[in-house]
Image (cartoon, rainbow, N blue to C red; front, side):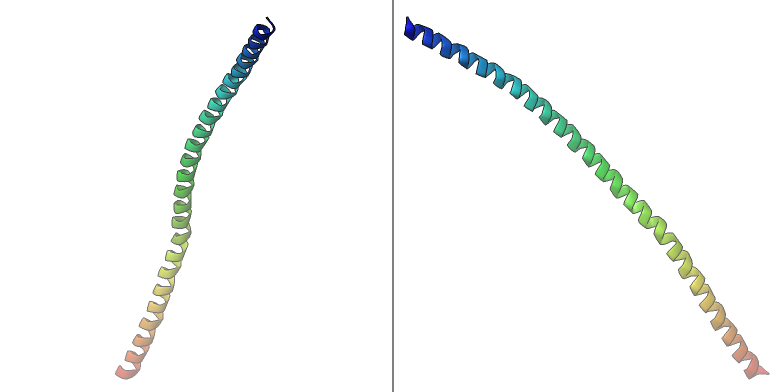
Amino acid sequence: MDELARVIECVKSAHKRIDRLEVELQETRKLTEAVIKMTERLEILTKDMDEVKKDVKALSARPAKLWEKVVFSAVGSVVTALVAAIMYLILK
């Protein structure tokens, strides 16, 4: 009878451990699902951030392009004025 009581106690102990492991497994599954969702959201945020970076680069490049046009126009005007002055002096 002692042996039977010991076996029954071992079985009860094993069942308690299995029950705790099942709870831990469920919690682990929930945590895994949460990590998957967070990873998906992070991927979306990363894509959005890349788009924002591209937009910022495009916007910051616009003033540089405008400045290049202004400089080109100014240099062109000066060269035109010099050529006109030289032509005036030659034809005078």
